[in-house]
Image (cartoon, helix red, strand yellow):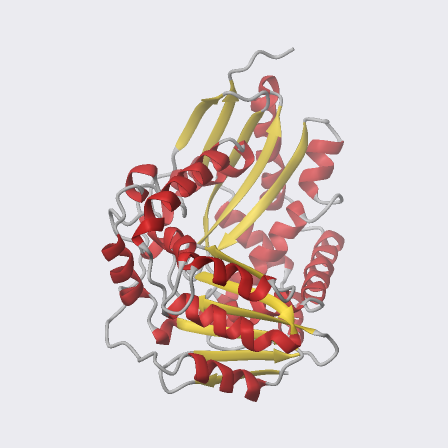
Length: 412
């Protein structure tokens, strides 16, 4: 049972009561992400996600870490292009601890100056870690190739020069402007009633007032697709190619794109896996991705292969994409993709954290809940003609951005 209440200060509380479990997952979502940063702020949303754990008005850093872990709970956070989520999982008897702690982190951080420079070094090391993982870093490079030099094209983690320049006063001002109560959703899933969650959130956010500040409108603009080659001290070549597509709020196309993507890359029996890995043995890993935001998204195909096979592999990928444009859509393959999507939805319902993530995102993006039955019906309603039209709109090779990592290590 999913319910929603809007508190007097504008905070939205959404819950899904699951009486058959003994745990609860709590997420405090902030409708602010890296695409909302202006020049000089690149990486600030992510850096704040780190810094809130360094102390609040009533807790020191060590108290934050121990508050849930001392009773077997789990605490974490992540930053995205459009939102930030602080979340916890605990036994249901410790739900109040989780709500107390998470609301404290979001609304009452202090960003101690003594921790600032140390955490900058931590984040720079995190950047190096991602850069050392070609399959991780190539997606950041792809987003820059697709979106260009605009916030949507910036890495969520930012750049070393921007992160190292952040000050305590900047962080406090950023939170005051972006962490507005009306942009916060508290999502809870587990063996707890909606009424109890509302009472607890009201209790621990009693001092939070609704902001009068306006939030800048999110925009993006189309850029000419870029193609890049980068030498890397690795042994395998990495290739990613793709383009922009419709966003989450495009109801007529989001399910169509999901079906198309699953047909291409949904498991071992998918087109890409069967016709490039299994038939030719050109790679260990190949898959397509559909990365969607409120008003835009991007579709990509990634693979790692031997550098001598990169041109042939690229041609094979484009050939598989062209089949969706030129040939009839295989009805059996489409039916299989629909079943995979619906099964994946059911799997998500079996864990409290997945349920919390689902209802939190739905509230942020749509302001309402879509039941599993609604989603399944929408997926079933996708027609072959719609899939072909989506393929014709997307799979235009000359409009594709592309990034290739070429190895510089000697091959043995």
